[in-house]
Structure formats: C-alpha cells, structure tokens
Length: 288
Ligand code: SF4
Image 1 (cartoon, rainbow, N blue to C red):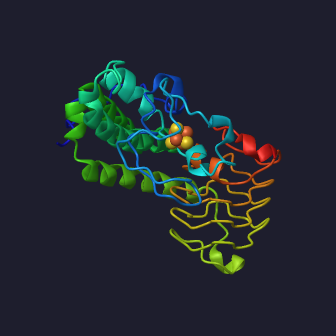
Image 2 (tube, rainbow, N blue to C red):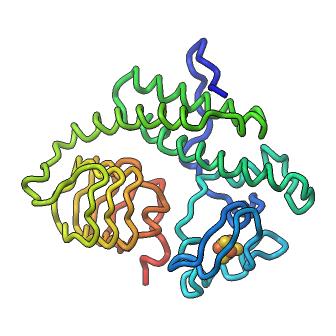
Image 3 (tube, helix red, strand yellow):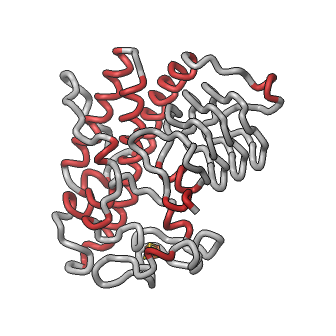
C-alpha cells in the first residue's frame, strides 16, 4: 500500500530521536520473542522467530539482564528497536500482550518487524531534518516523517500493508541527499592521502586509521570491524549502516558524525575521551 500523497504542508512530526529510544518496561519483550537468532558468538543458543527466549520471565524481563555479555548474549546488548517495541505493544495492540491474547501473537510479532524498520527510518530522517540547510529537502523529510507517523496511527493492518521497498527507496534517496550536503561542508581529505579507499561499503576491517582525518568521509555500509579509529575526527562522516563491531573509538570525535546509532556505539569500544552525539549515551562496557 502506498503512503497517502501530500495535499498540504506536512504536519509537524511528533516522533523525535528522544522518543525513538527503546522503553523496555512498556514493551511485551517483542525483540526477545518475535525475532529469531542462531547460535553464534553473539547468541549462546538457537531461537526460532516467534518463540520466547528461554531467558525471558513471565513479566517480560530478562533473567540474565546484568550478565548478558559473560553469558554469551552480546547480541542482545547491541540490539536497538528504535522504540518500536513500546509503540507496537501500547499503541497498535493497546496494551494487551500476546500472553493475554495468544491469538494476536503472530500479527503482533510481524507488526514489530515492520514497525522497527519504520522507526529506524524515522530515526535517520529526524537527523536528516536537523542537518540539512535546504528548505526543499527539509520539506521532503518532514513530509516523509509525517506520512510514516500517519500510517502507524491507522493500526496494525495498515502497517502490515505498507510497501516497505518503496518506502526504503524514498527514505534512502533523501538520506543520501543530506549526506552529500553535510559531507561537502566538512571538506573530506580524500582517500589518496590515507592510502585506503574511503568509499561506501569499503572493507576496512582491522585497518589502522588512528588519528587519520576522516571528517566528511562516506563510510556508509563500510566494514569497520575491529578497525583502529582512535583519535579520529569523524565529523560529518556518513556512518549509515557501517559495521563498527569491536572498532576502537578511544578519543575519537563522533559528536557530529552522520547517521550514527546507539547500536553502533554499543558494538564498539570507546573511552571517556570519545565524543558522541548528545542524544546517544556511552555504553556501560566502555568503562571496563
Ligand atoms: S537473553 Fe534476555 S535480552 Fe536476550 S533475547 Fe533472551 S530474554 Fe531477551
């Protein structure tokens, strides 16, 4: 189902980045039930989608919450639903859980996987709206944000009927426009100087880039697993979907990095000298 075309100026979006954060106490543990995972370094057990994790208690709390990493569930500490869990639980299904009404479970779990994608789009669009100086782009961003919010306000059936591919395409297009605009203002150094290819999707796994000027770099979708980014200036660098697992961020400046998420920070290693955007937080494991 396509989104409703605009017939007037977009309404002011209500879901800000502050409200697109997980609120687990208002969620029916949808990430611990709806999603499936395979046994790996991130998850100690196999779990099929649509089934409760064996560590979930009857009050929708995790029984090993304070021991997830040592117990082999690191993946749980880096997952971000962008606030989709509480929206599906409290708004789309009006606070009635899949345990109270088992007949809603399948629809609720499917809605969660869709709404998570919509909230993720809203997260990035919210940032795009604050970073662009182009009035037309700003209008497009607000129009998309409002349309996504309207679609979610119409209930689970409407959400499940959305054309996600088309939405992803439209959102990606405006995010790339804003990325280009922002990166241009940071005067990227270029990859010749660095001896590595700073391009979208670049394989920079384990690379030593310490103290390199990465401002304005297009690192969208780059593999930065275990890369040494200590003391790097990443202002205006596009990090959309970049894999920062085990990347070393000690002393790096990510305060003005573009499209950074909490999950990316949670998967990396920083320290007290790492600068991050105001609306994100330093993970507790950075203190270890
Ligand atoms: S280990 Fe805990 S946080 Fe992870 S899926 Fe299971 S119940 Fe949820």
